[in-house]
Image 1 (cartoon, helix red, strand yellow):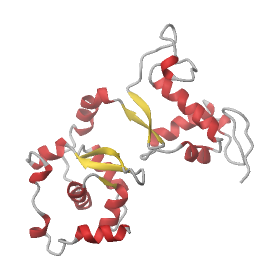
Image 2 (image 1 turned 45 degrees about the horizontal axis):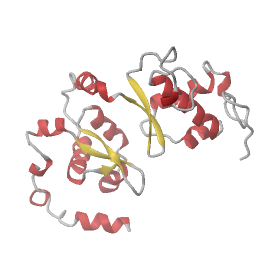
Image 3 (image 1 turned 135 degrees about the vertical axis):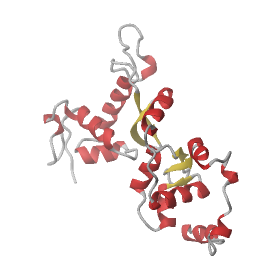
Image 4 (image 1 turned 60 degrees about the vertical axis):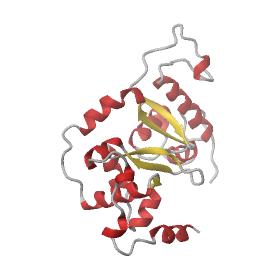
Length: 222
């Protein structure tokens, strides 16, 4: 499909004209970043919002500087002057991870956010959540796709629940696919009453027939 550029904030093609929305293209990108649960590339954002990649990359850089407390349109955050061009940083930041963009709470607020999110969440996990948690615990670090392959079902919503409960966390990205990897947290160990994942019981005695799961899974990757 051919595209025509209408400049920053403008729309291309025959999709929604985001420039007509409150705040224009910048606000539209921000709205999308607030709801996605997986990092989105500039190309994906451009396609979804009917903008050019160049415009999206420019606006992403501006948002990142803004969230970090810089209000000047400098080419790089480091060259922005601290004199009159810096405001208070936000409690969240825009990160570019493995080629994808997503909004995260700042690491400095981990204890505050964790305490708020986990407060009062004492409801038992569902069977689906327990099964997904078990796969992550024994296969970590593991991607969402690998967990889905092992369980044979989509686990997107379950993984979100486990993240919200503080049972799992991001553990970098897969060097081959770029997929986000997940691992269990210290809170998981606390709830399990163990000091490390090495203390988890062996699967074979409890789940006969799964002795060859490593070989089975590895064969499926070929």
